[in-house]
Image (tube, rainbow, N blue to C red; front, side, top):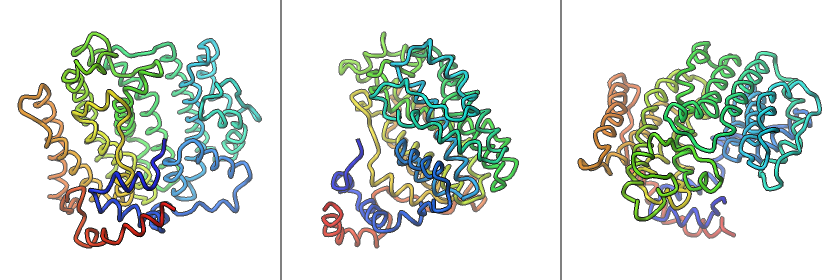
Length: 418
């Protein structure tokens, strides 16, 4: 459920800079980051693709539609194709006798004009995408061949990977956990890298950054898996690897028992520390991105992930429900994450938050220090090279002007809530 404006303002009441950012964002600042997508010259099918994009994911829709016009249609179609795959994979009402062959053959459906799928449950939130998938196919065929090749190749690999895991409702090993994350997110990063380079907006080097692109995807997917413990458990499919949680409890469900809260936090912290290991690859990959719209597109999900991991670390509420960052913080991060300098600053801020909660008596104290130390070393090198010059400020205070402006937010907050 999305957060209403009054709720968002209340959540940020002790973070006045976030309230200022939300008001600025609402009153026109949004268009400086996410310019309005002009669809006046688009085909009716492409217009509908953008509408479907808005229906399936408001957050991704905004960053995709702010991309350079050369890339925008290709990334939109790419996202919808993979979202359709995900809609098939996630729907537990579809029998595996139907699901597995469909996943393995899904890439070929991109060549079948008019193909749609009506086998999803009525409760599936993205069912409309499947019912109107013919418009996605139509626009895919209109893309330049270099884009079609990438999209179909990634769709084939992801579909087969999802099919391999279709009959699994949990994972046992860390290796399987990594592989699943590769199939559902790492391949996305690799496909995007190839599309960036194919567009000419990024160098050919980016297309070859497959390991780092995979790591970018894993950083996001692992964050989602860690956060969604309760939701996934309720849905009947879980992705915490037994190789990790088995060190703390006998069954995954009992991580949610209040009597196991200390053990649950230790398990949670091990999962978060593992995810932090991808940050060096995030820095290295992002340093190669030159186009501003591509940089924003890539950076925003990454800063959301590190902010989420900082919130999740040692937070027992993860085992009671979904824990999410404040809307005000999300808005501030979107406005800030526009350069390598700001990217380093944001990551340092949240790594320091995690670091502030470490205790020498923690089971994972040494491992956490090693992962965070590696991040700080890279940030120090960036400072020495003159790439990172910002001074890290507390999340709740971005300067005297913003603090002063807080005095004028009450009337504006009232106006926006009407």
